[in-house]
Length: 163
Ligand code: ADP
Image 1 (cartoon, protein in one colour):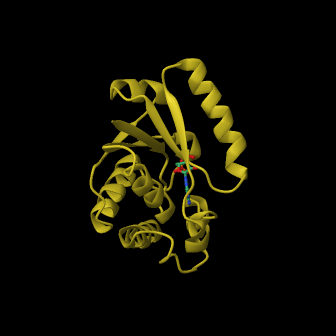
Image 2 (cartoon, helix red, strand yellow):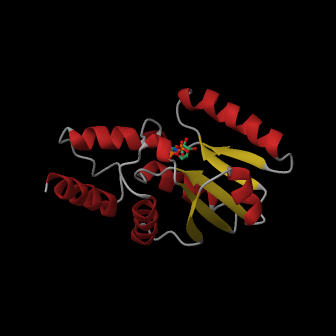
């Protein structure tokens, strides 16, 4: 069975990878949906985010995933892939309200699709893409938080912007 793991992944973190690995224990394959999400004004373009995830999966030796960019309704993306399952990660309680809202809305849009919530390892429970960016832009070390390809691309991004 195929499941869809959607997100902005700006950038992908070890927390996301942890959820992907857990999902692969349940499903044969996972399609990682990179939301264009322009209203969030991502640091990385959608194609950069896609490339970063693909390279991170190779680096972490994770097999069985495909990465795709999508825009529009998530349920349409799920249907396009003949899937019935959306995976989301749940960290601290703060994620719960937003995720609940989204789950009910998606159910309203398509009753046949289920959302499945997975908890990461505790060490990733307070990790988010925005924290990674914050720490990085204040010259903190993000080595333990992201795959090394992400740390590398973040450095390159900053160099490019300073030029
Ligand atoms: P979105 O903008 O859709 O929330 P994110 O890239 O921030 O996209 O997150 C994608 C999914 O991964 C969400 O379900 C989010 O809760 C989950 N997630 C993000 N970081 C972590 C983490 N450290 N541990 C577990 N789940 C996470």
